[in-house]
Amino acid sequence: ASIISANPTATTMAVSCLNDDNCILPSPITVTAGPSTYTLSAVYSTSVEGVQEVLTMVEDCKITGVTQGASCSVSYGIEATYKGVSTSTEVNTEISVASAEIGYETLSVTAGADKLSGATGTSTATASGSGSTETGMAGRNVVGAGALAVGVAVAGLGM
Image (cartoon, rainbow, N blue to C red; front, side, top):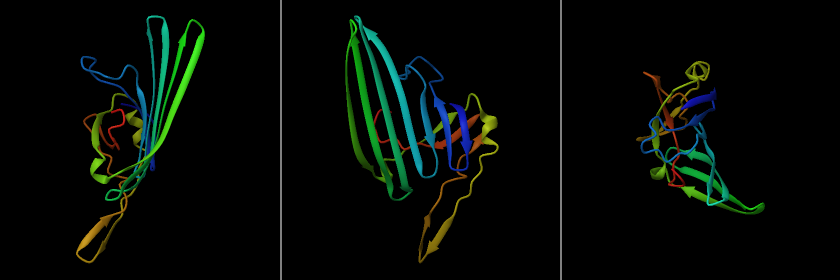
């Protein structure tokens, strides 16, 4: 991942494969991740037998809490052009993602790690009765040995 920008509320990065052998990403995707947000955007272009195609995908999630899950809007668009004639379509949907379906992955930082030094945040935990609830995840991002642990809400929607 190449860090584009970082602040206490979110880190934006360009994500691509380190090894092209089994890579399903034809070009980098942009991911913005923070304690309460996750956005993925990608544009794929291809040309097959004279048909140029462009697929656009955007997943935008508001994470309501580590125990509550996320609410996401998902948009897929495709445009195809053949001999100067274009057609396009777009599909938009809203989904809820349970906390058990939110996955967290470690990404290797290949560029822009210096942008992380100013991006600090705090975590707050509150206790009530015999249980406790974590109310924030800022500050959980760990930088070390070239790796960045990033919470990524992957709901099986293209990743």
